[in-house]
Image 1 (cartoon, rainbow, N blue to C red):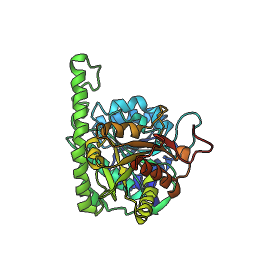
Image 2 (cartoon, one colour):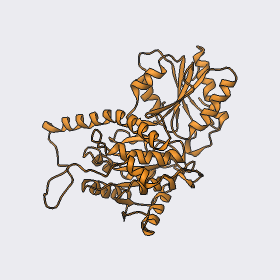
Image 3 (cartoon, one colour):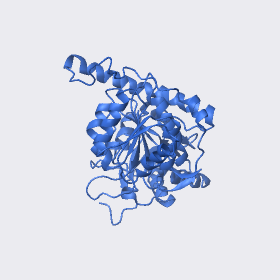
Image 4 (cartoon, one colour):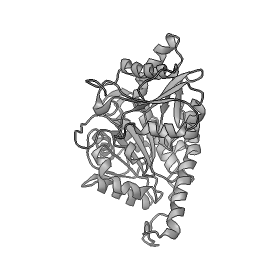
Length: 388
């Protein structure tokens, strides 16, 4: 099919047999929920759509549905994710395998409806797994994998599938939409643990005293760590069934003999791959790591892949307003004590276009640092006016 990534996500929810879908419209996510309601109306999807009065209520419904033992899916974006904030922290500690698509978009005053990652990255400590996709096919495939990963007995945590707003949500591309029989072989029927039953009432999510709270958080952390193995296994099994493999926690591109590289999220990687190809054609040993999962953050795996680099750069589509971005902070911690120099690179903020030329400018800075030259530790690319 030639469809948007939003439509691809909706098809994945249909194929995965999601049973409850609460929703509230917000650009650029709305197409996902609209498409699902059409599937339900046309008899193509056996699910209950629940329109809520706000995104806070959407996640409240999702928590209740998942706790009741049904496969649950929803979608949101930007301000909607911010309004869900309180209930995000109810889903993960209760070990509810909700799958949610987030169409990345800017938040707050001076906000727009274009892509930024400053809606999802600030909630990376809410206990949800977070995966960022590059295209429409990956949006469909990772939504399917998200159900498989979230519901695995070793994990039992919610998963957020993040896709760049408008760049993916409102542009079309050819997407292979698999048959339901194929998907049924990949995603087993939902087997809830400790589901609420009216005939056997119990209390869920009570106030937890200090005698037990720390152990609950520890178990949640262990589940997040265990998800690394489950993600890798899901990627391999998906490839065996559907012929598409994404690399698990991150995708490496021309890293075999690279001397300098960049690490980044989302659709930026398309331009980055083209930039790397151009640099390689010029005899310059550039590489790329497209980070797919921010939670769990692949610290050990990245350390192993980057420890011999002469310099590394991080691409940020989200500002922490602390001089550097969140990916830089995460990667600097992962590479601590390796001696690998790291520079930070901002671009595409507010949905501003990122071109191959822009990405090459980022690589130029990283390459200069690899040669031992003094460069800015943090550079904003495509900024109008002079940087201080």
